[in-house]
Structures are given as structure tokens and as C-alpha cells.
Image 1 (cartoon, one colour):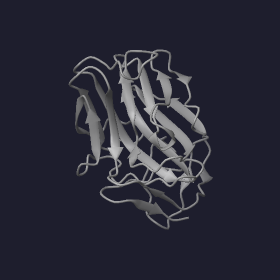
Image 2 (cartoon, rainbow, N blue to C red):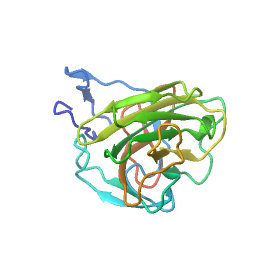
Image 3 (cartoon, one colour):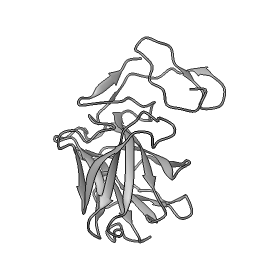
Image 4 (cartoon, rainbow, N blue to C red):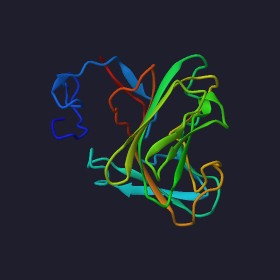
Length: 219
């Protein structure tokens, strides 16, 4: 909206987008957010490796203060990751998808490795959190973008064409190493995620909140 915040609008109400500083009518195709718990842990849908997940509370993301966040805390060193697991495959081989989520990490997480299992397990896009730059992009994705925001938040967007049918989305690894996703971070290191979205289509569209099921935004 005009204040730079993410705002929910009722169905059938025209949306005015101020992304470029000037209000414009937002016209988008019909899309479905396949992440059934975009701001909440849900029932066995979010998982962690060498860490725990709890509700991080609202008020952290300045662009959407009402959004709940999911908090990861490392309980071991190595293979530190969090991710959404749909429970059943939600990608179709050959179809295009767009993934987007907000991630908050401090300076104690120098590198973030973004894994997109729909295009292979051991290829990553890597974010250098020290220099606030993209270190490398997964050769198997169509595009990768990171918008570095205030308060240690970043908006991560990936587009891809699926080569595998998988149930996973929003899958960052946290590492001290610029060359290995598995090195991990110290015990007690924390990260936060919110507004997770995975949709079928060649480009990302505006956020569709979910709370227990997929949600479709009509044209």
C-alpha cells in the first residue's frame, strides 16, 4: 500500500499497488499458494534439521506487522535447515513455479544456501549475508533474486521449471562456509521466516496468506 506495507484486501475489491512509488491498479492472473501454512507451523508441515521450530510471533516483519513468523533455533552444528513439507508431491514435471518468502537472519549466519528440490537435491543458490549479495545462482533454476530489507530481513524469489515431483518448499540451509551448505552454524543461532508462497506460474505474484489449506486468488 502507500505506506510500503503488505495489506490484505477483500475478494472483489480493486487493489492499488505502490511498489514503484506511484499508485497503480494491480492486475494479476489467478494463482494458488500451495504452502498451506504460510505463517504458521501447522500440523507436521514445517520441519527442521539440527534445530527446533516454534512460532516466532508477530510484529517482526515491518512490511506486514500482523504476520506471524516461524522461528528456527540451531540445536546442533551442521546441516542446519528449515523447510515446508506438503506431505505429498505438489510439483508436476515440466511445469513452471515461483517461490517467494521472507527470511530474517543476523550476522551470525554468513551464508544462506537455498535448495529447490524440484530441480535437484545438490544444487543451490547462495546468498552472502556479509556483503548482502548473491554469491551464486543455482544453474537449474530460471531466475533467482534477493531483496535485502531493513532489520536483517530479505525477500527471496526463485522461478523454476520442475524436473522432479516433490513436496518441499522454502528450504534454506544456514552455514558458516562459503563453499559448503553442510557446515552449519553455532548452537543457539536463530532465523525467522514468514509469508511463504509457492505457486504454479512463470513469475511470482503478490502474497496469498494461508492457514491450513491452499488458497486461490481469482483474477
